[in-house]
Each structure stands twice: as C-alpha cells, then as structure tokens.
Image (cartoon, rainbow, N blue to C red; front, top):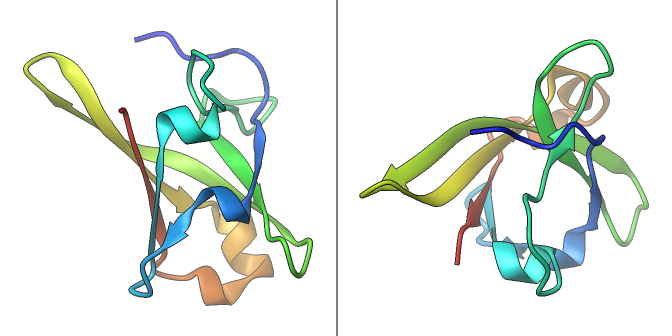
Length: 105
C-alpha cells in the first residue's frame, strides 16, 4: 500500500474518544470530515514513517503519533493503531502506554 508523501496532518484532540484506559479511538470518516484518503502522512522529513499530530484542546500541546499496525480482514483495512513517538514521550511522559486506534468505517 502506498501512503501519502505529504507531511503529517494535525487533528484536534476533540476528534478522538478517550476510553479512560489509555486508549483513544476515532472513525476515519470523522477525521477526514467525510473526505477520502488516509489520516496520516510523513512525520519525519528524512524517513518514511507515517502518522499524525494531535493538538490538545485545553493545553494546545502538540504530540506526534506513528503508525504501528495496519489490520485487515478479507483484504480490507479494518483499522490502524498509532503510538506516541519517542520525541513526544520525552516531552509528555504521561502519554506512556497510550494508543490511538482509527477505524476504517
């Protein structure tokens, strides 16, 4: 699968449901506001890692998340799993253990 060569998009933290167990979820259509494509792009200019940024609404802090897993069923992508980058964990240690799952609805 070919991913975007564009740089990582930024989403508001309000786009994600926090489940209280260090996991957050979102539906692809909600992130893209009904558009098409992928909710992620390159997170480093010198590497092919992809992900996105999240801006926390109350603090305005920005964290970067990288794509760790792409899950499929019968050849269709069902969801993607993202984790905070090492740089984000260094800045915001409270993100340790968190993950974001985006469902391909």
